Length: 343
Image 1 (cartoon, helix red, strand yellow):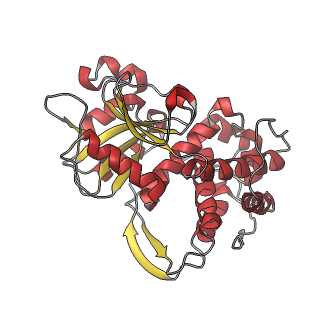
Image 2 (cartoon, helix red, strand yellow; image 1 turned 135 degrees about the vertical axis):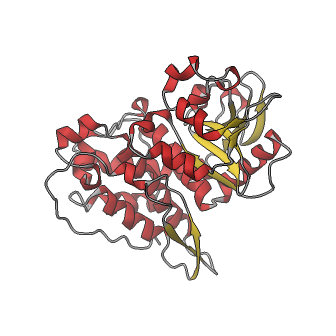
């Protein structure tokens, strides 16, 4: 199994075009989720392994309709990577929710482990999650009683709903977890469910947090509150003047670019992105034959441009090899895209 790669984080002395860089970062998360969504059958139809999937190929098979999961998958990845990258609009409310869930949680920045039982089919994924959590990690459900060792119970939860008969009653619905959240350096892990639509938010035995966009439904204002009916500390991310406005802008830019590349009609409910996001859309559309991984890399570089003070951290992306283990296929050569700073 691959160890966590060393990633260079760059910090800036004078913020310039921060929104543009953030757009690139969230667009990268959305593309990563779309690549993750490809099934073995999709790859068989494309006759390629996942690391060589080109943008045009992705655009022809990807789930574009909102009710088929594209938005939800992208939102989960974006929240995970925003926590990993220390985005204050996401980190601050999650930190508040963790401290309210348990007064014993360390007062440190949150960290995130991507889960989702449907990802367990990828070779090495579960091992990566358990190893990243650490040998001393445990789950902390609500109520009194002994905590649960992280590794064995997470392995069971990976079976999905079928695992309920084998799971302890206190954590029977932990298979619904999207992210495992903890404070940096803390062994306590809290199961969080992540939904891009608050109407789909459900509680369950073992779940402690819910992460959703702000909305007018159910008096779901931005911030942190406890929902007694679901037994969850709910983090509602601000919309539109917060993380959700940024996510929606990037989401529609990526979705529209894939509609163009895949020659699919643009769904009528896709709103027009901002001027900056339209530039991201146009840049993606220029590279139909580039691999999705090349586009991801270019988006990542663009998200870090004009940053001048360099630091290093180890950041987990939960064993990237599980994205690259499927069947071999013919090589495809394409130019590596370069994105320019949004102004």
